[in-house]
Length: 439
Image 1 (cartoon, helix red, strand yellow):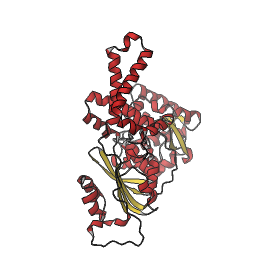
Image 2: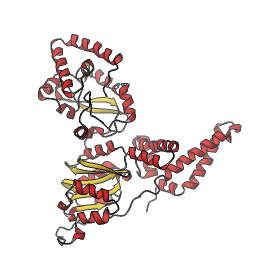
Image 3: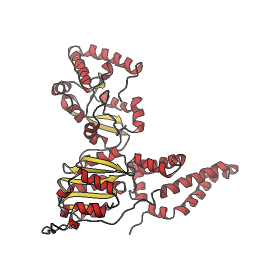
């Protein structure tokens, strides 16, 4: 058995805390004047940093770790269990064996799926973060696949989801669970005093959320943690599932986890270019309908672009034409949008000639599909712009937004230069003096 350095540190975390405490004092002895080395502030700072590391290594010690395979149906082409043997039925096994201690989760599955319709021989129920339990299955075999272990402990999620996708038949169901970042934060608040919870969550965010996503720190993170206990937002989880060929059927929160059920709708191709960094490019409908990559600073969680249609169908649109209660937007993303920081990289598109200063907003394929066909045909005849007519008329609803764009395009078709000049100064006034913003 291979023991990761992170596991070794956790096993000896008590000694490691005091070792780190001594190391910090040693570093301070080099950097600071002698009279300050043992000052109360320096000692307290060193001890506090050591304590935070200790708690980070141990805050999930009592949580469920990787457990053994509960059940994995061996593929036997000619095997046929007795019809009257209840112990071989999926519904019975889920209720009385696998989810005996999680009755709420069983009720969630039972109310969301017709469990009796699944062939028990082609159903898989496990509790593991090991790829082996998926690798041993034939492709296009399973009708139902349920892993009770949280996906936070799985190293390469896209690879894992892709493996499950290939093992499921078309239309097969995959159920799992995740501890999203907002519930992870609540767990810290419920475990530690408020101030200490904030400090621990800050370091946890750096270690579990930022380091895995930076190329030069990613290898260090995985070498020390084996990819365990990653911090995943719920938006990223949903986006990854859609990216890997699934569509979400439903989800529900139990304790500190969100359980989800999704259905295979296509094979996983691995195409696309999902990125984690702060600088992103988003595919939008450009001139003559040709896709164009619009540059922006990230304001949403990674993989959010893959789940736009799903969020829209649940929450619909808010005033101003944006999706209502869009949990894909990060806390700092709201601030960046209010200050227009996220739009600055679009100047690259302007210099490349893909956008003009005033024009209709470059839309995603899904949002573009919400427009009526007549406006769609009219829009693609003109280059999109940095400053859309939205900030001229300040419409509230999608029909009003479409009317605003029709009016602009009609005027632009007759007097291009004068129309853009008029709109530019009006938009400038609305943004600077009326504080007009797009949420």
